[in-house]
Image (tube, rainbow, N blue to C red; front, top):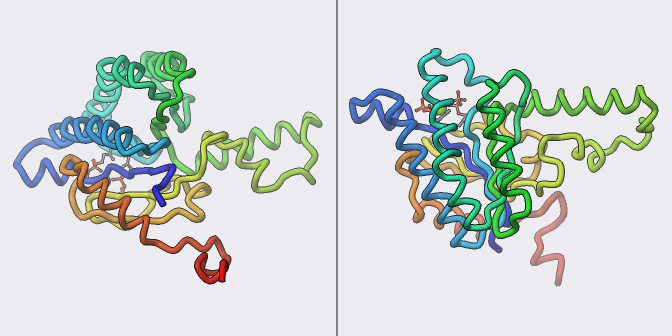
Length: 238
Ligand code: IPE
Ligand code: IPE
Ligand code: MG
């Protein structure tokens, strides 16, 4: 089976640049090119949902100059690529904490979501200023408010209703999570949503991630036996 939702932890831009004697900013620029190619490839492969981890809530701990490079690249990506994404029927959604973002960035995120809201060919979810613990804590805060205002009965809190308070409300859980650069950890990405995701760790750094790497990850996914706590699907039919 093909995954309906692929999520990618785009890691290794800095190491890619370091290996070439280039500044980290050059790695991030090359990373944007890899993102562009991956969105196109996923669309052509008929993957309806693609989520990419672009900036984590912990990435603010990086040097100021690197943060400003990353913010600049996000703005450039939306300004340059939004028209093409829209033309190709891609709906853009952003998950992560919106509070405290620079007003020009906030405006671009809203523009990307509003312009593409009616598109149905493919969904691109950008995790920006995203951290799963922060997302879950914000969801709990909103849920607590609803309980305090009598809009929600505590007895009605269950995994399904809770998920409706997350930034990812309405987005299916990722079937496949890919992380590049050889690191094998989630780094605070989609902790709730990844409960039954399959993982593929790819050794190459993100700027080197190719269409063939995506195809190989999807092929590896197809060979997995997802049980969701039950028994082997082949056993179950016999
Ligand atoms: C991923 O590459 C991009 C972001 C986290 C924004 P890194 O910048 O983490 O690159 P490495 O991991 O230092 O090589
Ligand atoms: C995860 O990568 C965040 C993004 C890809 C945006 P990091 O490079 O920040 O993660 P750690 O620090 O290696 O865990
Ligand atoms: Mg990294």
